[in-house]
Image (cartoon, rainbow, N blue to C red; front, side, top):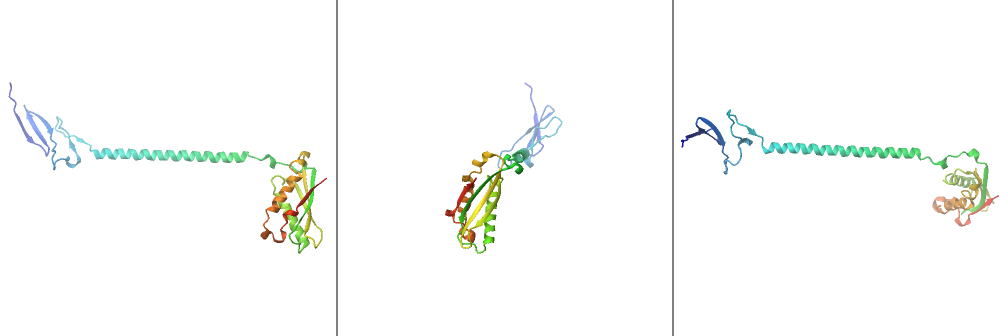
Length: 230
């Protein structure tokens, strides 16, 4: 058996170089005690290569920083994607609403009053709470209220023509009125322009009155009368 001779010397804090038959090899000795448990200066030395160099392995801290960077970039990309999706949905909704409003033309709003050659008239009376102090002004105010009421009616506004008011005497609080409607088709006489619909519009207005706000223009609800004129 041949005899082997070993010799060595310390090359660094943690490394020893052993010599065998003229060839050098290196080994890394990790010190696992209270003082030498951590690698020096954040680097881990790998065994020396044949050319005497020493390789350095990146530590765990660098890998963690890279992972955190990638994670942050991923979250930012998701936020940007979510914002784009929400923006697109909002744009689609706005465009849909605008298109719907543009195409939602009410056919009932399209009418030509020159073709309204038929008339429907109503007359009746109601009693004011107190007689007018100024008869002319009082009658004009009542006429204006009747005109505004029927012109603003969604069902009757397009057919309303005019309202007239009359007084029975200076001592009387009773006001007579006449309503005129014009329309293009005979079938409307007994449907939209029936006595029940015209009467209910005026009755609802009278019942919605506020006595304090109306003052001298307050109409007694129980006094309302209406008839169709043929």
